[in-house]
Image 1 (cartoon, rainbow, N blue to C red):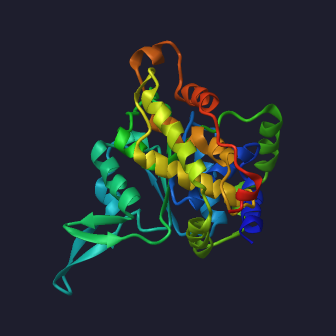
Image 2: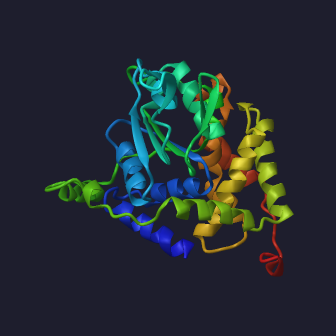
Length: 317
């Protein structure tokens, strides 16, 4: 049931976001894993379209914040207002009071506003005037940002990057895909024809189901060794944290669900390793000058760390 409904979700999103099936699948995997998604790429490649498509097809309450330099923390958390009739202060919800928050161009806003979003992402709650208000469940943030160096952007702090389950780059579509995009937008916006294929209950059910996905000790040891290898890599200044290890475990479980399995195999870990861990690495300055990227380091580690050889009869154990 989960796999069939997931395939339905993917097919609906493909009608509005064409030619990037792997990106669609990875975002869905992160949502099932209970994480947040950061989309980084050049303006105009479809980051916002993808986020809006997910909010519509999954039937989640959603809000959008277009971040600018003057976006205030209260725009995210909400604020208290004095009611003259009741003589009391009343809480007014902010943009975070929804199931899916689209944080557009997150790296254009101030660190203070980013910190307000950080609490919402990590604690699933917001604090206003000393009072904590829980956010709806599930709460998912899909954030977009333009590459660093684009006018008006500033780097997200490492503490906030670490809160995103995955960081994805969409890339430019192929010639054939661009032709299909132009045809699809000839008469209407494809987003208008997207049908609801799930709901908040489906997301919660899948997230709860992940706790029953079996992970052998050999697999846990394998993903720990992968993350430890990043800390010992000479080119890396800051490796994968324990939070990153936990994120990798959740992503591997969610990937197993989409592959119609109730257990994790090494290929699940390998499939999600780069997307889950690349944004958590900090390379030494000289490596960046030499053109070395985080994904190149992670691919090298995948080749060096040998996966466990599971006994066939124990895969289902």
